[in-house]
Amino acid sequence: MSTEREHEITRAFVSIANSMADGADVVDLLSGLTSDCARLLDIASAGLLLADAQGVLHVLAASSERTRDLEIFQLQRDEGPCLDCFHSGQQVSVDDLSQETDRWPQFVAAATAAGFAAVHALPMRLRGTTLGALNLFSDKVGALEADDRDLAQALAHVASIALVTDKAASDKDTINQQLQTALSSRVTIEQAKGVLAQVGGLDMDQAFAALRRYARDHNARLSDVAQQLVTRKIAGQELLDHSMTGLA
Amino acid sequence: MDSIAELRASLGRAMDGGDPTMSPADRLCFACVDLFDVDGAAISLMLEGSSQGTFGSSDGLSRQLDEFQFTFGEGPCMDAVRDGPVFAANIADGAETRWPAFVGSASALGVGAVFALPISLANSFVGALDLYRHAPGPLLGNSLVGGLMVAELAALPLLDMISAQAELATSGQDEPAWKQLKSLARVEVYQATGMVMVQLGVGPAEALARLRAHAFAQGLTASQVAWSIVERELSLEADTERTDPGQGHP
Image 1 (tube, chains in turn brown, green):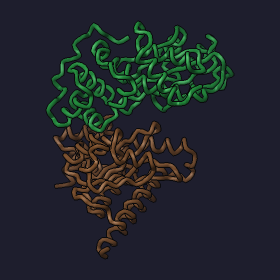
Image 2: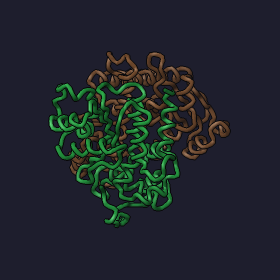
Image 3: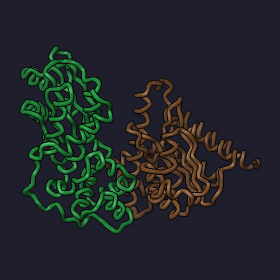
Image 4: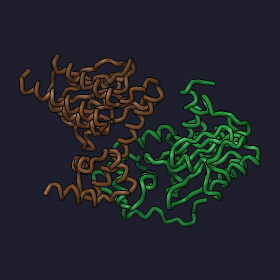
């Protein structure tokens, strides 16, 4: 492992730890974590899927905010490595996606059409319960090296801990409630992205960046800003004006 | 009673099948009385700036309890929409001070316990499932778990009500209720809902209702319509579906 990369890994963990200590918004924090994953592991796309109380998987955070990219993760609520990983609690690694068309016909078709060649799913576990999975897509055929696999698993563990931050949250109901809150704030963030995309003629990546920028500049939580936008307490144009001013 | 999965299935069946002369919302309310430890159920809608009122109930008393709340401007269903689930296990002993007028009238009719579970549409609370029982006591076990499931299912008739597309919506309802709900819980639907909010100048619940009504009218799925909106092939700005003032709200 190069010194430069070790340095980057350290920085990523320090940044996550600081965000958690500051009580940062969990979707915001995990969006950062998936972007770190993609960069540090040199993979094309990373996403976190979280199960709701019925065991249905939902996209919680991803390294790209584009609708098509999010859909590849979302597809796995019906079939795919993340669903298998969630059910078994075990890592699922597919070094060559094209060999798995029988196993997951719809998923493989969509993932290969998006340019992906290999996929890995690592369980997000907390005290014996699997909460969801970290999903990594590569555009090259091949296995994850042992170092990379350990790093990815460590990041998946960090994500689980970040999701259930309350130390007192040992009972199942409290944990479920925290997960449900995280999923619910993700829904509001998607709606808010739609609002900004429509108001400013932006794509979803740009809309997310504007939302995030506004939240940071106002020292506010991402999900709170999204909520204010959706309930029309902040006007979409006002938020975009701020982002544009900041960029100029 | 049965497992949670069986409870889910029987509630889904109550809404999908059941007596065709009853509305889906009424069928859900009757299922509550059949399956849970309650004597009555009602479903109400409280969308800001839009329709408000009771649109499903199991009996006259539950409808009347709902109407008290609208009359007095206070009660468990209003609180549920604002803050989340409300459990008032004993309203007869004077300990319940949140809604004096409502409690007075409800107690006089022999009601001992009232519960209100919020109904969420497009991630915001827009209505409530109100449950009552003559005997005081908490809402426990399957009555609670099942009540929360009914509150989830009630989102579908609520969407129909908001879009005022009752006829079209019924024709599109060949999909089981739980499957319909799952088909709305998708990234592209969330994003398109935000875009439609701006296109029509409405809140999230109404935006979702319009998206879904458009899908039914065109014989498409909500996901297909959402994709067209996200890809900017479709805008609901020029949509003129809501032209039937005759089909008003209750």
